[in-house]
Amino acid sequence: MEYKSIEELEIKAQQARGLTFREIDKKGRLLKKGATGALGNIIEESYFEYEINSKAEADFAELGVELKVTPFKQNKDKSLSAKERLVLNIINYIEEVNYTFETSSFWKKNQKMLLMFYEWKKELERGEYKIIEAILYEFPEEDLIIIKKDWEFIADKIRQGKAHLLSEGDTLYLGACTKGANKNSLRKQPFSDELAMQRAFSLKSSYMTSIVREYISKETLTYFSSKNELKEKTIEQLLKEKFAPYIGMTFYEVADQLQVKINPSNRSSVANLISALLGVKGTKLDKVAEFAKANIQFKTVRLQQNGRPQQSMSFKNIDFHEILEEEWEDSYIRNYFLEMQLLFVVFQFDKENILRFKGIKLWHMPMETIEVELFNYWTEIRRVLNEGVVLTKTKKGIENNFPKTNHNGVLHVRPKGADGNDKIQLPDGQWITKQCYWLNAGYVAEIVKE
Image 1: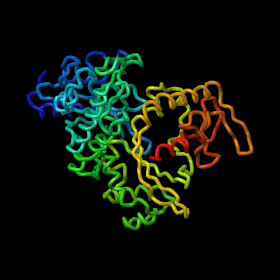
Image 2 (image 1 turned 120 degrees about the vertical axis):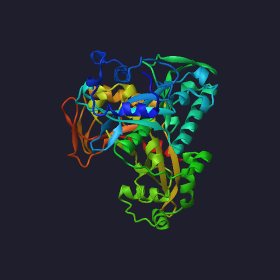
Image 3 (image 1 turned 60 degrees about the vertical axis):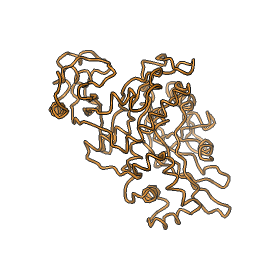
Image 4 (image 1 turned 30 degrees about the horizontal axis):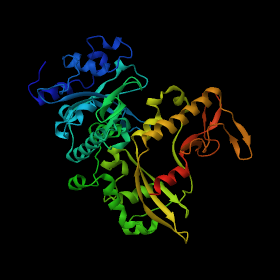
């Protein structure tokens, strides 16, 4: 069926709000368990009544609109977020290098998207998922500037014969995600004999979360940079310019300059300081557009006089049941570091032992580190869990046999609970103090020393 106008298409899409996939499915696709892309196919053939295809052009070619069916979820704190990245079209390494952004396969297919959001709930069968919202989405000009730079970075890496080294962490909004059944899904690339993993253009889950919160939660984001600034400089360059005038100052001197009341023991004080420094005083960092869409998270680092952090850097508490159930490609730790950009805000004690602002570092974990050190560590944790966690009473307390800081020099697992009674149950039934991933202090020192 052809639609005469975008407005007509939008009206049709919005009429699906409140319907479950079971109510929409006319072809029995829900009966095929585990069928990849089944929910999107149901919308295509049963709701919009067109044949499933893999054409290079947009789904509604006459209108230049691509259809995407994508899930969101409600978090424990009641906020909404995208459940996953939005996978777009496969990257043809041989052809993509011959295009400009405006003639690229990505832009031809995805410049206008009809996004149909359904709410994913763990306890429901997929046929019971409901369509919640349908919107025609066009990239805001500020975002498009960054997306174009992301595409150019990906294309340039292919031109350098480095398609096999592409990583989602390389870019901010538009990623190059792996797309294939397994690690044997390989493709030729034009300027190297080395085969590269098949990849597709994708909008990162953080970018999709920003869309969910804007259109479903009705939240507003604030940009700290202007369109002209984004055209001329990278996000990292703009951040460094914003922070540069405060290098050498103490925490309190920076606060005085920005007229911000702070409590150094309160983590939110640093966040308030950063938002004031960016010129969006009073805005939470997760409401700053560039931070939210690129999944930029800040970490304060306090260096001793010798340049080593006072302590290792903690992240999320570990769900040991989840580790045993997940595959590496979909594991929490892999995707956490794969998609996240860390903004290190670095302070260092001077010779008089006064803590002064040293600078910032925008960083993402290299792909090789993720696929080697993180993978090996994740595998070792699974081995310990499967063979049985050994808890030993020592003078320091109860110790376990999870790999320690010297395992790979990158990260380790150790307790992070409110106190010794803040515990979690292991898959074998034992109770243990809540454990957390920590980046080793020495590894953090190497990252921020530049």
